[in-house]
Image (cartoon, rainbow over all chains, first blue to last red; front, side, top):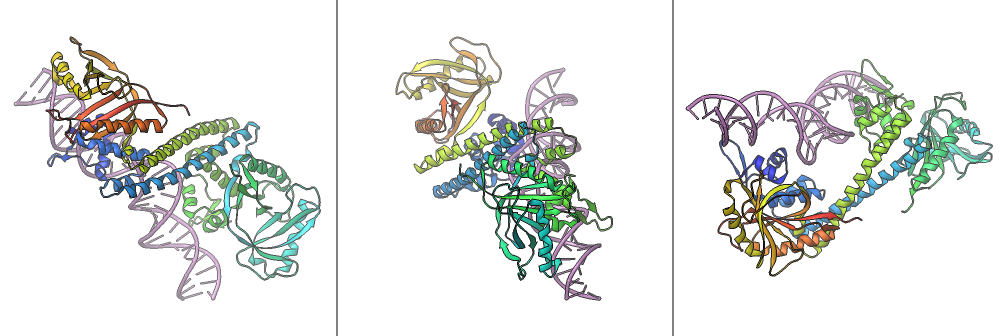
Length: 270
Length: 270
DNA sequence: TCTAAGGCCTCCCGTAACAGGAGAGTCAAC
DNA sequence: GTTGACTCTCCTGTTACGGGAGGCCTTAGA
């Protein structure tokens, strides 16, 4: 029989940990002095402690280990536990690898003095109802002229959510741009005249929050698209712009605007 | 200005999280109503929140993010942070991969109905003082005869720690075994007669706690050695046996004994 | 036999990043 | 005016322990 300190030295498990395992019922001392409360461990308990450590090393929680060790577990169930654990661990490894890849991409960006790419995040957006008009317009800033058209055809401006633009060209164009302008909606409305009313699908997007003037959006796009490529994603749909903050009258050089660039993406198979 | 629920819906960040970020000073609302305590967020805060999410995604703690966002950080410092983070993340990935590898090995073992390999753990053992005799003996059980020799040559049995054996043959032998028998010591003693007194080096070992009779140790060795191989380790020294529990008179079939097998190992380069 | 040092006990707090819930106040629409 | 949705603060719980306070127990030395 060992006192807790001796058992701790023997196993290299801290006294705190041993007491915790006692408290949680994972490994109770072979004997506890009724009057002093001293814990006494026996060498026979070493295998159980070792098994605990081994399972912990495999990534099981103490609660799972407790259940597994509580006696009545079959080889079948154990197999099931381990197989499940492996699946979780596979996900874990993949996530951590992707995180590492993002870090390495960021470092590459930073070597070129660009700090912006810190801010690109991948997120899921839900399906959204949209009312819009789509036209070929002279250039990007000209999209501003489309919003009044939408507003005048929709009865109640109170129903409108965030203004958005969707760019259907897959590359940058100086003129004859295929643009769509409209608003997000909380509920579907009836379509009027030349407006489109549809539910825009949900998507995985690379999102970048641009805080600054519209005339620097092109630069922002370049960075986002390079980020997408460097992180092994592929463009999976037309670009979306959400105007989170935009004062009227609209100006191209107002630095207070907040514009979100959303590039639908899908992961390229490794 | 958005109320917290609106801002939450807009960003897909939970209300709880936003309040937590307020509390920790990471992202305080643009305005807080003095009387009601209501939090009001502005669209201008979206970029900051996005940056927080991005850094969190890269694995930084909220505390680190707080420092980085607190304004006065140079590109140099940011680069340093990210580079450090990458190093950590590389370790992380490696650890998780190794854990996965252990799980897969275990599954392979379990397919063959062996559950024992759950209990093999890698651990570091410190250098230890040892007093022992080394001889070529008839077979493994014959090692028992060596311990009295050690005891009689050492004055005080009170100084002796755990009995151990060290097997210097790299393979299983039926006879003429090169065995060493002795005891761990707390402090060095003077050597006497034919005993050796030396400090056994520390090592990384694959350790298996065998709870059962000596005559089943061979089977245990087989499993441990297979585990070592399957987990891409290489044997790095003679095997050690520690007799944590062993009643006298010594019998080969006493199932209450607890014997630890330690196989010094080193990782094989991937 | 007394004492001092160390070992052991229980109880409480802290960790990171929130989630859940109680109880009370606030806002907006009908 | 009322209802129901929203918001507030405060408290607890999560995992696997570590640190420390305050008090009892054991053991070695004087």
